[in-house]
Image (cartoon, rainbow, N blue to C red):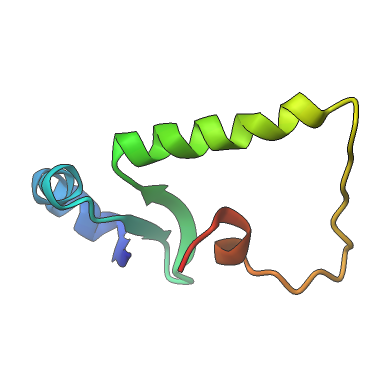
Length: 83
C-alpha cells in the first residue's frame, strides 16, 4: 500500500488509476500538512469483495452482538484489515 499526498494524486491521477487497475496496487491519500489519512483507493473488485463480506454479519443481527471498548488498542489499519 503506497501513501500519496492529495496534490501528488491530482498530478498523477491517470498513472495511479492505471496501477490500481493493472497491478492491483492500493493507495492511501493524505491531506494537509498534518498528513491526515483521508481515503484509500483500492481496486473495485477488492472493494466489492469487502462489501459482500461486511454484509454477512447482518445475518446474525438477531442472534449475536459485539461491542468495542473505548480503550481498544486497535489501529485504523487493524480495524479495516490492513497489513
